Image (cartoon, rainbow, N blue to C red):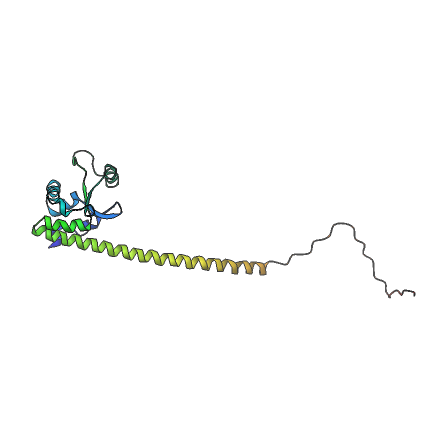
Length: 183
């Protein structure tokens, strides 16, 4: 029944990272709840005490421009006001503001998407840590292998031949019998 309301593939794509937080924009939430963005924002404004700054915040003009650039949002027509961004807690609070069967089912699906995203991030963090440990181990082994290869190269290199001296050398034959000294 939830699949009829929200395509599961669409939820993770709607969750964006803004100001270091996972958020859903008011327009995405309005589409999921089946209401207009204006009506959603009116409900939020009527219940402003339920939405502190860590639950919802307005995007700056620069952040909106960044979203337009990243996601190809048209600048013609559409919104006249800066959009709201809702954190996970803000989405949960919306269920108390919007009292409908659809809102409850949508919130359940959204909470599951946030949990799945959190689990995915945790898995990726663990994989990154293991990858880092492997890199360190491989780096240590590379140093040891380099030392072994250098030792093998030194053993394989032919010994240096003595250099010939430059100049004239007299080679006298040794006497056939030893010479005696007179005392």
